[in-house]
Length: 337
Image (tube, rainbow, N blue to C red):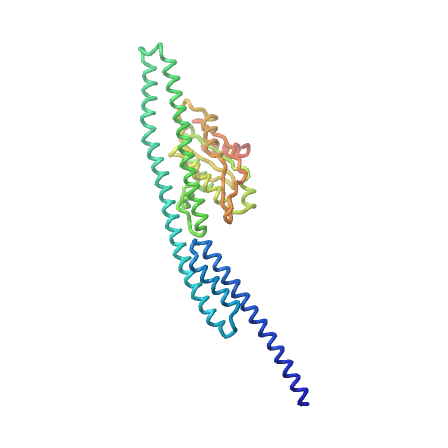
């Protein structure tokens, strides 16, 4: 009986030794994996090799350490990881400050573009007015056609410059949103509040009823492909495209325009009629050119270009219409675009 008991105890000791050896091997492997991963991320994130070298050296030490040395190795690992965490937090803070500075610089530059355009357009408009007044005088009768053609040419050039300017401002705003989402997707963008300027359908219908027929043009727009975008990749991508579209709309339509969302992919702008020489068709063509550049969105760090096509038309209200008739025309026209 004593011999059998000794054999059982030896077998139990052998099993315990095997389990201990397995635990030691698993500890070493896990320790080395954690240290190597932390060293890789430390060097990748900050470009600093100090913590990474210490972690790799500690991993080599742990691979040959005796079990009674494991607590000391663990304490050293925790200390290095704590230092890495502090360095990473400082690095993220520095990135956040740099991102905020770049955003502010872009915002300031876009604002300066708008101010420069406002101050630079007026002299050109005054010159065009003088040309038109001069063409109406009796002394300028032989040159009347040439003067009018020159005024028309200057106006067309000014409109083209304004479109290019608005596109530049929109591109800057789009870069700001994209930069913000790449660095800090969870916090609100500095341009996020701009969406609040767009009326919902009930408010838009009320504004249309209050508008005097004959004193307004109504632009109707449909974003084809937007409904599909809401399903795939999803609402985040749709929100980014919508923000870009609304930003472009604000920089494309006249400043007096009232902008609203009629449906999921339907949008309406109400504004005073432009110069009498501009036809609704030509005005609509210019608006669509300003809104139809490719759209982008950033999803999980990847930049996507969804297929968005914008169609639209202009409803030129008549003084003989009632507000109810204007609403009927808007609804009928939206079904056709």
